[in-house]
Length: 318
Image: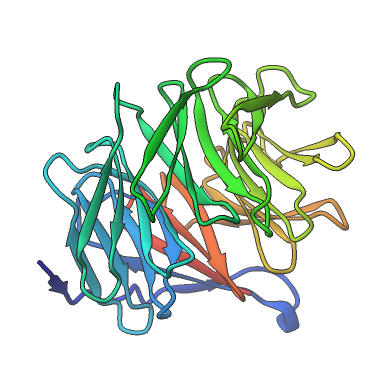
């Protein structure tokens, strides 16, 4: 079933105080009221997918017209994460259905891969080099789905609850996840599925999400500590930087095509750009309070985020 809603994009644009030659533009788009969008993923066709966690559907936004298409995912659906797979389709971690869900981008056909066992409290997913989807669940599990066979496997996380963000390196040869409750990251062995924890220097930092740069270096948003961490899996070296502000809380992290690092900071209600070269931060403060940005994603020249507290999506074009 396909429902089309015509929504006007918010007309307000605002510019950041940087030199005009490099001036990013920030724009917001309304999505249906009550959807509380959680995660975003740029679509192959130029649109943007988003999960409507409170309304049980996958949304698609046309950034040219503001049009939103809604695709219901099933009874009890509460979609959390969305990524675009090697097949060009959106793949969703659906906590309400305790399942991984695939939506055909041409027909809107929904395919559900139920998880065995207890409710995983599903969070995020990524694809490895073999086309296998790996996912996390905060109840203390992570797992994988083979899209070809439909086989679903679930593993117990080595330190219990907390598995949250997850990412594969650019060549798909390594997969890392972050454990919010466990305050560590972990690397998954793609052959046997076993995870090996790696501890950041700051204790109890609350590693929440992870992303990779073009070299396969892992960046970590540290929620409790209000820091961004950098882990080099080739050398084992760590670096950490405190975000600006009195009480930063780094929720999401994303690395753009120029290896610029972006974070969502709930303490300052902002998207924050971090330049690893100069080790400097540039905040993009949201115009309304309580944006509650939970995920960041993007494509060349665009950084997208979901404002779950305001039923809006936001993009920084840079």
